[in-house]
Structures are given as C-alpha cells and as structure tokens.
Length: 263
Length: 185
Image (cartoon, rainbow over all chains, first blue to last red; front, side, top):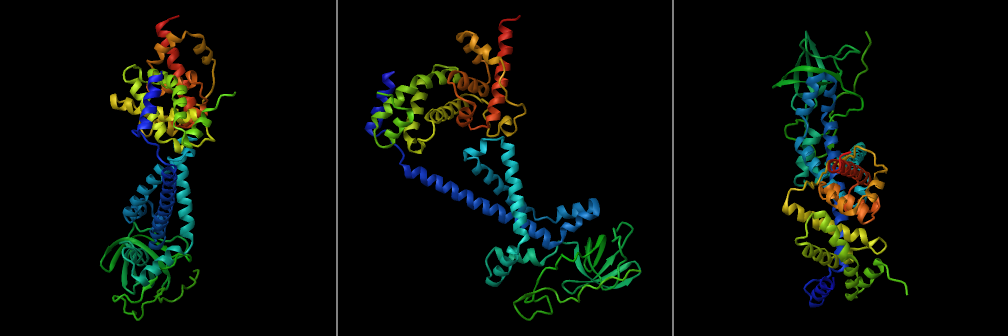
C-alpha cells in the first residue's frame, strides 16, 4: 500500500507531476461562461432574424392556403440561416451540459427548455424594432455581410409572392401595382383560393401567392393585406426605382388603403 | 485529537502541503482499487490506473471546491479514467447520449431487493455483478459498495438522479434474474 503513496509523492517532489494553478481553472470557468453568453446571444440573434425574415417577407401568410401554401413557406424559408441557428443551438446545449445543473433532470428536459427559451426570447426580440434598426444602421454604414443580408431581408419578397394594390379588374384577371411600382397581371384559376369575406375591389391591397412568369402570376392564394403587415421599406437610392432621389428609407408611396364597400 | 476530514486535507494540499496528498492516497487507494477491480472485471493494470487517478486528482486539485464532498469528486475522476479504459479495450456502450439519461422511463423507487443484496454472500454477488452491463455495474458498486446516495452517484456519473434510480432498479432486476438462473427455485 505504501508503494503507491511513496511513488506518487516522489513524482510530486521531483516535479514529474505538477499541480495546475488556481487561475487556470478560474480562467477556464470564465471562458466557458463567456462562450456560453456569446452563444446565447448568437442563437437569439439568429432565430429572431429568421422570424424577422418570415415577418418581413410575408411568407407566413402562405399557411392559410393548404398544402401549396405550406410548400411555398418551406421553399421560401432561409434554410442556411435556420441551419446555422440549429448548429449554434447544439453548441449551446453542449456548453450548458458543462454545468452540473444540466444533468439534475433528464437531458430531454434540458434540450426542450433550451429550444423553448430560445424561441420565446427570439420571438420577444422580433417584436421589437431591433432588426429594423440594425438593418437601417448597416445600410447607412455599409457593413460587410450584414448590409446585403438586411437589404435582402427587408426589401425582397420570395419569388412568387407579390404585395400591391389592385388597379384593374379585367374578367377573371386582376391587375396589380406592386410595391416596386411594377404592373403585374394576376391570373385567377379554379384552384385559386380567394378571400371569403368581401369581394376584391379596385384600390384594395392584396398579398398574392403563385407561380410567376415575368409580369404574370398564376395565383394559388390571395388574401387582403392585413393592417398590421407593413410593406418593406424601399431603398430610395435603388437605381431600379424611378422615385430614387435620396439615400433615406421610406415606406412605399402608395395611396392609403380604402375601406371596402359592402355590397 | 480528531481526524481531519478529506476536505480539510485537500485544503492543506491546495495551500502547498504536498505531503498531505499522501494521506489522501492512503485513504482512497484501497477503495479505488476495489472499485476498479469490480468495475473493470480485471486485476490487470489496476495499479497503473489507480495511480493515474491520483495523478489527475493532484494535477486538478485546485479545481476542487472544499465546500463540497471530496469523495464524489475523486470518484468522478476514477469513473472517467475507468470508462476511458473500457472504451479503449472494448465497445462498452458509453455514448454521449445514453437513452436513459435523455428521458428515464421508469420511476426510481426503493424496493425490498436491497435486503436480498445484503443477505447474499459477498463472493456470490461479486460474481453476478461482474456479469452486469457496465452502466448497471457502476451504480450497484457506488450505491452498495461505496455507500453513495443517489445524489452523489448523480454527481459522479453526471446523470440525472432519476436515471440513477432507473439504473439501480434495472440492475437489481438483472441481478435477480442472474441469481435465479444460478439457483433455480
């Protein structure tokens, strides 16, 4: 028995084995905490940005149009960002499991708690104007990576989604002026899901989902633009926009939404 | 003169009294060798492995919080060392995500099986325990041989206390089956 004791003490005295200093562990704990904090912020930022894109693009409204709508939503989702968020969520889980409180309950509860808290926190952030402000800031200061990211998120609709005002009703077709001032023909077919409450009238604002072929869109779903759904701000300096005159942002200069007459 | 607690000795070692570490070695050598012997099912290389545990303990001793109990902490180091040894030698099924740590399916409960274990001869039980899968063997060893509570086993193995209960239940059930096979009624 004494052999092992003497052997180890001899190794300690000869310097063969050495005690790691206290600061080593303090530093490690500090770095772990810092890493955890950064990862939490990144996860919240990424997921809230994904929610922001859903909200800005209007693709969430596609859910009202059955399987086609769900497919549209899935196809138009920012999968690269969602994947990146997922990777950081896994990293967050691995960092959390370094703390003893994480294994006091079943790991499934830890995982679910992290997912729910991340979604809740991100949803709360998305309810604020944080991303709009970041978007405006990055655009003004031309921040690499972030500027194009926010420009796309704030100014672009997914392909096949058009928001605009009805300017003409011609037989079964509608003519709509988009947010960019483009005239688009909306083809209505038997499969098009139309708003149930009131008939479409000229001057009304609509969100149209469908397959686009240049200036014609064959709609599978049409719904009135909700009052709380704002059109994305257009960059006035955009050369494609004839109204371009300054570098400021402003909402599209479209007439106010008319109150539809009940017939 | 009252004997110093493990934690008080660790405090001395942390303060620079390297000789005091010898006392810790003396206190835990036999226990760790017994744990290693029963957990790894071998006598081979046990001395080297236990020495490795003490070296790791000394190297990292400044990380130990003397407000906690020292025993689960050194057993945690021993557990990791022995599991690594098992992984090196065989595929022992110690994954990052053991199914019963993600969601334990059975409630943990004490049963009369505890009585059966204490009433059986130690030698006979040792043989049966060695036939158990490693994850069941370790909870039996820590609970019945080292007298660790569920909470302490949870700290050593870093698994939920409910999982400790589930594993103990299953280990006892397996032991009962093995016992009945050797001594059919």
